[in-house]
Length: 356
Ligand code: DAH
Image (tube, rainbow, N blue to C red; front, side):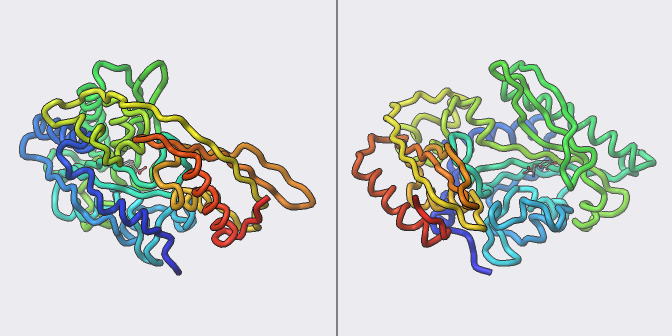
């Protein structure tokens, strides 16, 4: 099996945005850690510098993610080889943390192959927490009592965390499904007249805790959240690519002292769009196409939409519109033509599509 990780993605693994104290993602992480340390002094151990390269076993198997789950596919996940991936979530590290600590917080960059728009980027950041107890420690007798206790504690904690970060917003809990927790829940907040999902959580399944080397009477809770999603709201950052820019007009706007300050847009440069149409081969994964577009256009690609699709004589044709826009400067027609030219050269070679 050959790796599907491009050099561009490997570069991102070196950026370590969470370790830059004045980066908005890091400021948010710090605020969340502080919340837990203040409310539960000397309880949570934190970790933010684990290697994003993890065994498939930790990312999927031990978390009871089924063998045929779509998230395991080569079109969704970056594989170094058959047994190693770029973590798709920070939950991959829960086993290690649970084998050492009763309460932990951890944050890291995670990687997923995905569509392209202002909210999706192949790398993003998650913050994860877990806490466990033994039944005897709390004088409880059944596992059900433990689960109930954990879920109650978790809900109160996460509601007050959300209040601290988002202010006095309306909230609601929905039932969710995650393979490694039961029950599983998601928290939504009312934001600009919409309901916005802000985190997933639940009580660890007993098997997951056993997989982490815990005993039969250990129970507890877990949660995970996407830092970009939170940060885009609280700092008013309109495009996910901005988190990766090295432009000083972005990087100097934020500081740990200023906390949740609002982003001041420095300029909006014009968009330039180009369409590309091709006949698709028998095996075609859209995420492979997005990857080629990213590899050629990098962070100049703002959004890719499928704008047309038709079938003729048993063959299917797709047309995509690629929006190019820099966050930091004006683009010239020549450079976009050059990118589009490279794309037209690579697509037939890499994906066996036939350009139209
Ligand atoms: N790992 C999940 C994801 O990436 C998020 C998550 C949900 C983490 C529930 C948790 C949890 O720890 O309890 O979608």
